[in-house]
Image 1 (cartoon, rainbow, N blue to C red):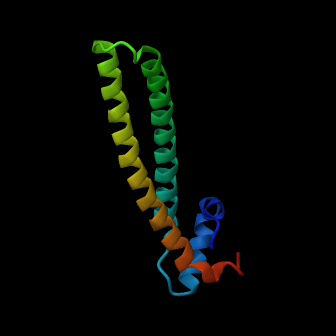
Image 2 (image 1 turned 180 degrees about the horizontal axis):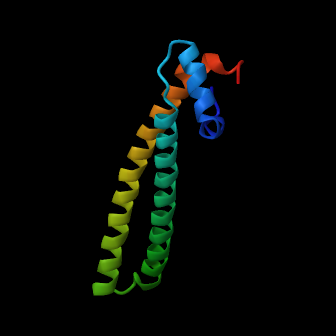
Length: 111
């Protein structure tokens, strides 16, 4: 498999290697997918941190059924839904990147 970091740092060389083999240059697409992947990971981490913070607060006040605890529960549920949604996007993105990398595995010995 090709190293995504190498592709990111050597876009033109990667595309030239693909062209030499009669393949379509894809460095821009691969690096765009990689950037999207990085952004998704960052968002997921931020949501996880927020969920953990709210869950901790909820644990501290869970004995009391009140408006604040209900609101925190809804927030945690919403965050969990958002994390799940982002995780699905991340898996799809990873699959696309992996497909590009595996499809061009024959370039490894040249790189």
